[in-house]
Image 1 (tube, rainbow, N blue to C red):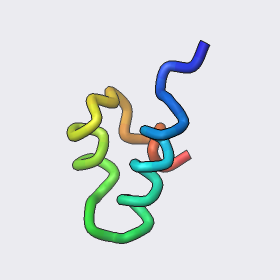
Image 2 (image 1 turned 90 degrees about the horizontal axis):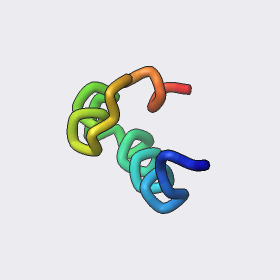
Image 3 (image 1 turned 180 degrees about the vertical axis):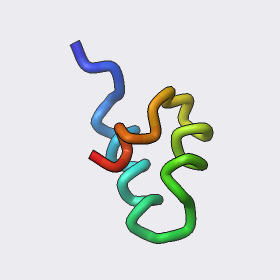
Length: 40
């Protein structure tokens, strides 16, 4: 079972690659407990 939908993952990756937000900020924004999930 997926914890996060494909659309949410796509949105997070898009924001991260645009360079506007740090992984820590994105993790907080989307309620992800581990910022390393964004980096992997």
